[in-house]
Every structure is written in C-alpha cells, then in structure tokens.
Image (cartoon, rainbow over all chains, first blue to last red; front, side):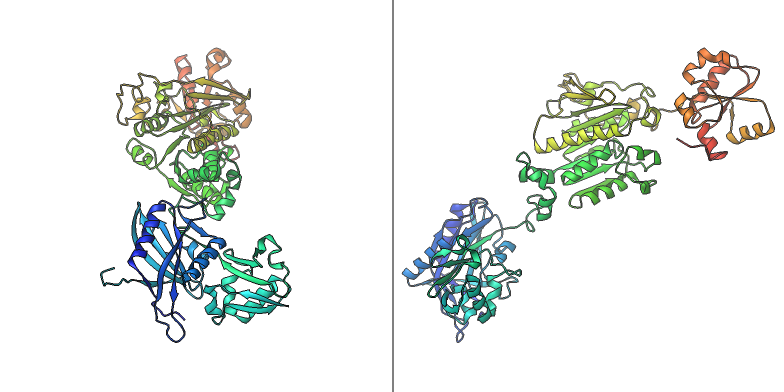
Length: 158
Length: 481
C-alpha cells in the first residue's frame, strides 16, 4: 500500500556515490542497485523506505549507452545475493540521464517494475545536477515522485 | 504435479506478500496462468496486452532460461522451481521526446526501408536526409521530378519557389500536376502533391517571384539550392545568391533534346559565371514555349539533379562539381566536360568585384519577363475583320509564315511560306493582290509584313493575334497550341 507521498531515505555519502558514478560514466548512462529496507506494511504504510547501501553495476547496453541502460537477470541475481549477504534487500535501482532532465521517460515507463524505487540523476556536461526518485503507478500509466530524504546522523541541509 | 513459482520482491505486494506459490502445471504457461488467475494484479506486470511475456520478465526453470528451452511451452514436473527474475531497463529519451530529425519513427523506418537496408545509406544517411533543407527554384519541367524524388527520399524540408499558374500546356512534362490542377498556383499544387507522397516531411510553397530583393533572405534557411528555372536572369540571380551565401547550386537545363547538369557554388568549384560570363543576347535562345521540348527530357535531367542533391546530402559518391554533364537524348549519349573555377571570375574568383545582387534583367539586356517582341508598327487586321471581308467576297491572299509542322496542327488554308524562307520565295506572291500574313500569335507575321513592305509590297496586313486570336474570336474549332 503506497501513500501519495512516498519517502525514500538515503545517506549523503550514498547520494554522492551515485553522483560520482554518473559523472564517471558520462556521456553514457550509469546504473546500479539500491540496497536497503522497506519497513512499510499494511499497518504502517507511511514508514519510509531506506537505502543503506549501493551495488553499482555495469551498463550492459553498449549499443546505445548514451540514452539506454540495461541490467541483466544475472546482474539482478548478483544484486540480490549481495543484498542478502548484507542483511538487506534490493529496494530499487538508480541510473543517470546524460544531458537530460531527471524525469522518467516513456521508455522507462514501458520497462518499469512496480514497488521498486527508481532514482534518476541528471548529469549535464559531466556535472551532476538534480536527483529524483520515482515509483511506477499501479496501473502502469505513469510514475509518482518520491520525496528523497537525505538523512545523516547530524542534521544538515540536503 | 506441484510446481513452485518464486515471486520476485516487486511483485510480492500483489501476491498477498508471498514469496512463492505452488501450482499444478504441465508447462510454464500453465504455471503462470495459475499464478495470474490467483493474483490477477500480477497479470499486467508480467504480460503485455497481447498476452505475451513482457521483455523484461525472465523466467527460469531450475535455473535455465526458458528462452533457451521451449519458452512458455517448456514442460514442468513435480518439484520443479520456476524463478521469475526481472531485467531492469530504462533510458533518457525515446523518439517521441528527442529533437526532431535525431531519430526515425517506426513508420519512417518502414517507409525508407529500401534506403535503410543499404549500408551506404543506413540510419545515419536517412537521418542526414531528414535534417536536410533543400530549396527548389521552379516547379516546372525540372522541378517536377526533383520535388517528387526528394520528397520520396525523405528530405526533411523542401521549399518550392514558383509564381506561375498551372497551364494546360504544362501537363506534357510537369508531372507533379494533374488536369484538375490547371489554373492553380504551381507552388501550391506541387506542395499538395509532394505532401501527399510524403506527409512526414515539411513542404513550404513560396508563391513569389525570385528577385534580388528576396533571394538572399529566402536562401539563407536552406542548405542546398536546386536551379530548375527557365530564364537567364534567374540563372544568374540564383548563382550569385548561392556564391555569396556559400551554398551549393545544383544546376540543370534543357533545350529540345539536350540537357546539361552540374553543381555550381561549391567551395573550390566553378560557378555559373565561370561557364557563361556573359548572357546570350535576348531572344537568341528560345524558351520551351518557343522552341519546344520533349516532355520526358526534363524528367531525366531533373532526376539527375535529384540524385546529385541526395549524394551531396549523404556525402557519397563522386558528384558533378567541376564537371558539366551533357545529355543528348536523340543519340542517347552522355558526355562530360571539365569545368574549372575561373580565377578571374567577378564573383567566385580571387578578386571578387560583385558582392551584392544586381539587376539581372538589365544584365541580360531584357526588360520585363521575356524578350519583348519587336515593336513593329505594321498595318493590322483583326480576325473578325478578316472573316467579315472574306464573307463579303473580297479578294484576299492569306499568307501563313509558320513552319510546316505547325500547318499540320491547324491552318486557315493559307499559302505556307515559313518566315525564314520568305526572302527567297517572295516571287510566289502577287503584289497586286491584298495579302494578309499570319502566324501563331502575330509576332512572326509582323516581321513578314515589315519585310514585304520594305520590299515594295503596298497591300499587306498583319493578322493581329495570329491563329490563336482567330480561334478565340472567330472559329473555336481551330485548336490552340
């Protein structure tokens, strides 16, 4: 059961790792798995999902990597195993949009899974820009945006 | 036969939170059917509207991908484990979101498939065509095949410049037009035809006369200019504008049975002035209306121009820069002459003396749109007057100064002495009888009357407006041509 404003908590170091991955692979898209915990349930639907770790991957689309990314089933199995080893689960995926807004595209929508959090970081001219997170709507018609809560031990601005 | 289906995390909320479910199934299809029957919400995430497994849904039986087995018909038995593993895919833009010209839609891919399957063209080449902007000067005999083939090839933007109106006599060669287009502005009729052939491209009609005032402005938004005009002032205007703007000028011309094609205006190549520094004297070179042309000839020449234009866009092959291709349709021969840039050319040479567009009519010694008829003052008679006098029984000698093949089209039963032969056949005429000379439109017969008067004939009249006027005013059964 998703509330209308889902929240995704993530530590600033992990945000930075995602940004650096996008910059490193520019002008190609980067991708990776978000490992963490989802504590929400029927009883407490508004508990945020939390990203505790990342599992960076190699973009398997080498025919069109500037505007496409691909994670194979093998990669998914590896990510699942890595999550299990760390006592976590795969709660979503991140990828970058080189020189393009951090908004899900039609292609994203056609290939999306429900439940997962999809983080997108825009990388413009090798500089990382906005970062957003999205979840596929139930009827697959589009996405709802999640609030990225950049949360660290000492309170600072995001 | 209980088969266990492992449900991936993203789908568990739709399966009552379960990580696995068991079904009786002889095949993978049956197992999945069981799964989506029990948990209907799963169906849309696993299958397309057409009932096929979505491309990002991977199904394994005991660790083996069903794509390498029998797909959904892979048999299953008791104790087998079916694992549903997601692929994750996405991207930043698709053809509906990218800048136009950067991708081809599925429809375009189908339309141009015969281009795309050629490695020499391919997607890259087709996208170059889509991005190209070509301006056609003239939508007549040459402009017809040009427009049709460039539109068919998918040139993204075509401009059509012509201020003329479709005439019945055009249909013998201007194959973009149909009979129902007679009377319509040519640029608009051509635009409609080309848009019908290819609705995916942009076709803009400029129903305007190309002048020194508008040429530079009109040309600047296009990449390549194709010259399909029919008069010398415009040839020089197009040439100069292209050289000043640095744009290629794909040139084609026709005369009766011959054609010429080349490319002017390329950086190291010659321009029209290098080949023809001076225009011919006005009236020397007849237009199609005056000299005639075999209809298919501009079809061939214009098609060569289209081919050269496409090669320029694709950057392939060897194009006609610096080469004048001469086509002799009667001999069915193609010959080639080398053309060199004239280092002293006033506009494209080392020391440019022309740096703006001039008055091209003055340059060509022409006032108005065509060479004016000699303004001869000769005595005239109108067709109605002639008919009245003939009916009255007046003795009149009708002299037809046209050519024999024209006499065959229609005649007033006059005595035929072609104008060029008049001086040496003047003895066939009796100066005591009143002579009415006629031709097609009254021009040549005016010269005949002038000649006869100078030769001493006192009773000579010119039929005003010629046989065309006779058809209009006296006898409509006489065909016009």
